[in-house]
Length: 168
Length: 287
Image (spheres, rainbow over the protein chains, first blue to last red):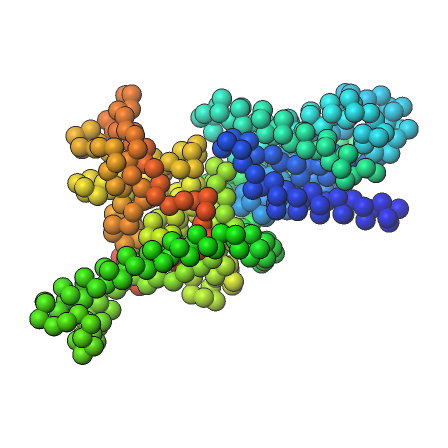
């Protein structure tokens, strides 16, 4: 039990550090900037209490805000997907599957399911985040383009992480 | 009462979500002014130290070009100083004559309203709508809010928050900051801000039609803001057009400073800033 909690503390730290030290510095063609720190929320176990997940999501977001000078923006976006995740799971999975596995991993759920799940979470998050950051509907299509391309890259990176580091 | 608790428990997730979302969105909205809560700021100890450590490794690769640039700047400054010395001595004495240096030096100290110091950039971004720069000097080193920040004599930003060892700078690439700027050739001024699109271009607004503008015109600071002396380079006009339905030009300014490659910046302190601010604040309450 303690070991599994420690594991999630580690995932939290790795997600934040990867984002802050590596991916925040990546900007491709002035439009694409991936946000992969939500990996932490993606990987949380199925049976986590919803209230706890909201608190963890907000903590994750505030930690990001601390590094990017954007008070509330990341907190708000990651809180949203913390709230949406149970609904998304309900939408794409049956109760039996959720009960037979402990947490969302490619190894448990299959590549196809995992990719769908990550895509829905990432797109929700990026849509909210980029518009909140821009705080205007000026340049609506530019923002949409940024969201589409950044989401694509984030999804690829998060799914890829399943094969590289977070195998269990 | 019992029913209320039942209700609260039943929907506690939704209540918690709404509560937290209200809190975070309030944070976002109150951020409209760039004077934000100091806590959420990379000048805080925790993230400042991490960025400082990281940049001390990554900047090793950037030091060489910076040194070359600084050497070039030194040459330019030396030349300018020499010319000043010659002017000051009216050609009667040799510029390097040490006897006359003290008098000239005293003279220029009185005129020197602006004091310059340097700092190292420990964090910088260009990919957001509201970009900030973190510097490795803080209150301890005499950095104060509203000090101007320059790189190679070109405008970069303005100090907003200061902690003991670090300070954050609102970058020119932040759509929430405006600075007054003028065209060097004819002294017409407007307001300069960033539209958040291209990190190499900012926009000069409020420039009326009758003003002659040309591509390649140098845009400099006006000196109306107490943070920057007059005549610091900001960039050059790269494109201008007549906005539809407005009386002003839309002028695109190519930035002179390379924001993607900031390592060492200069901080400008205006010794009379307090006096100016006090005087100006009297106007606000006066009428």
